[in-house]
Image (cartoon, rainbow, N blue to C red; front, side, top):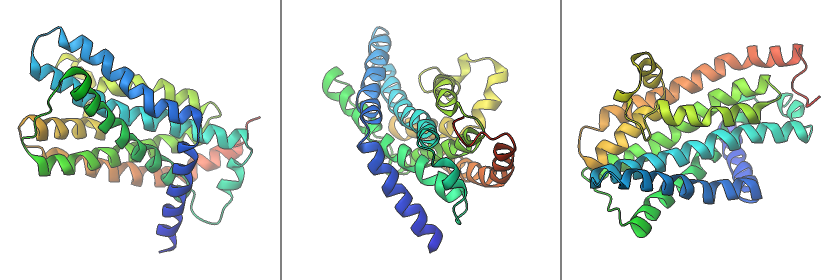
Length: 256
């Protein structure tokens, strides 16, 4: 119960911080619509309505990842700027209970990005989203958001070690779009990229959402997506002590 209370209040605290941040607010509100608009104009030239649905769903999940990768890394950077990261590491609770609410809050705000992108496509571009498996779609969306948040947690563990964590989050933003097949089918990527894609939960979440909407068998993809998310948490918790020990040895918890 103590751990759940720490996670719950941590989520509330970071969600409030993000909703009151001008940078994070602008990022969450405008960036998904910008990405979606570019994607819709690109795919509309193909003249195939299914391509527009493909682009709409891909752009929606892109917004979830963008809302997680950059704000999560910038949250750690702000903690360094304010001189509180060392204090957070020294708290009695396990540091994973401090990091998890950050990434869960950012990915939860990503739900707005997903909804806003779908509504933007419908009202601005006339894209009607099919819904072949509504129940599976209702499972696929939270599974994808949770998996993105857990992947963000694993990356945040690594970001603790390095002072330039914000830059690292920004650098990883575009490669994940590409490797996870948000807008580009994985079949068009080189063969050596596919095993990397399969190890990323958003890949399976994206497949599940598309199959739930356009027809297919989304439930196996939902299960794999959720299982990978749990694996990210386990790996992050196991790595955390080693990362913190290295950060202390190299004095990278402070900004200078």
